Image (cartoon, rainbow, N blue to C red; front, side):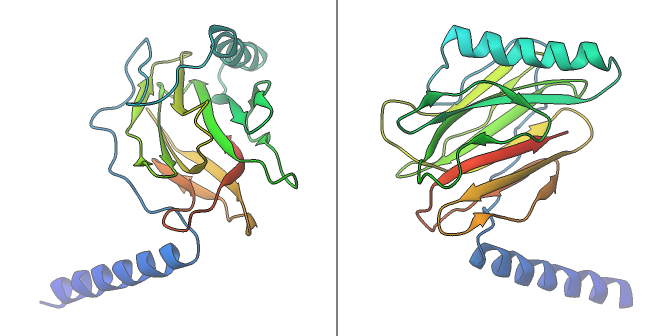
Length: 203
């Protein structure tokens, strides 16, 4: 009896915390991908732009370079598509993709990992909502978001095949939000019409 009351109290507290977090700018969760990232290959989210081959190749090559420096390390590399800038160069392991202090929206992101069994990503977009999970296997890149639509990305969900992932979003009117960690994680905001301007990801 005491155990079931404790679980019920925990559930109520969890719902209350979810409400508080949602009200203070944390993105609301979108269900987990139905399966972990595939062993190889990649998939594009419904309605997502496919990044140019050169951008995908750069992000995938960056993960290979990082892995060659530390063969047993977990690594993630990513590149952002930014308003009036286009695709930026790949960055890795907690570096900043996007811009801060310029009022520019992130519109899309390409992500690749090594040492974690692949990656899944999901973008929350203005006037669209959650786009849907797309996954890529070890060393392959996945793309979420849009380009050419002047559509802001508001939040980003990331899940890896094994272990955990961390992220931090820079959002209009808030600056850097608190870091989030887990598997999956959600960085940014939903329901506030605020643009993501930059992101950091690590595994």
